Length: 348
Image (cartoon, rainbow, N blue to C red; front, top):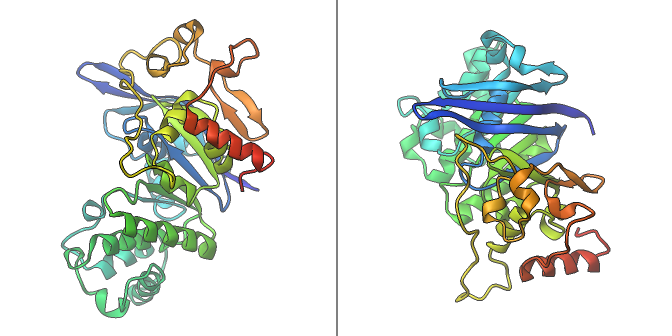
């Protein structure tokens, strides 16, 4: 597959009254044409900052102190603001968490959906409005011709999120960044939005970076998954790798806290003890060590490199070192390993 986006050794710092917060600490990944990459992790792990860096939509006190963000080989960090404005919403688009704060309450939704076309393309207002109607129909807004004259408050939460998606895809971007687009929605509507994104991807061929803290959502949309903790990636691989052959204790913890079809309704879900580290003073070793029941002395002293599990599966944990002791993961994770083995190492 063609690699259209590559992030190399990204570092993002925030200047605060208490000092410099090292929010992103050496993140690298790539995105292939037409695929979906999910970035998962707890709130505060750096997921949103990572993707906002791509479009340079960071707070005024943020600095990208190191790294490259290559879009078709061109470093976006070297682009002028004018050049970035031609890329944002046109080549690379973004869906934000809360649709109500993403929409202008004083503008009809027809004008809001048509606006990117008028900004980025030499089209007439009539043609832009026609395209807006087509895209609203594509995302499932009933009777779009009439509803284009309505305002955001006249739509349900799920419909508003569909409108935000329409705005993001009206220019048929090559990359769509979805930053927790289902967080504010109920479970049924979440499923509808996930199905919609999958359907749109098939129709317009857009590659998607999907940000979420919910691994259950990931299973339904992603091709590859990157697990993030304290400003770093700690494991990445295919959906099958992460769900059925996870190797990092943090990934074990995330999966162990998920309900499954076998979970008893009275059962209490497990949780990861402790809290993430203070990135004003990042730890010398593995940031997850204080919360890791399997931590060794070396975890306190040295940041683990990525160890290769398989061709496309890597995990940054000293447990994969040849000299590391063998450990027994949680029972729920062992069951996943067994299923992986039963399927011959292929969970599909």
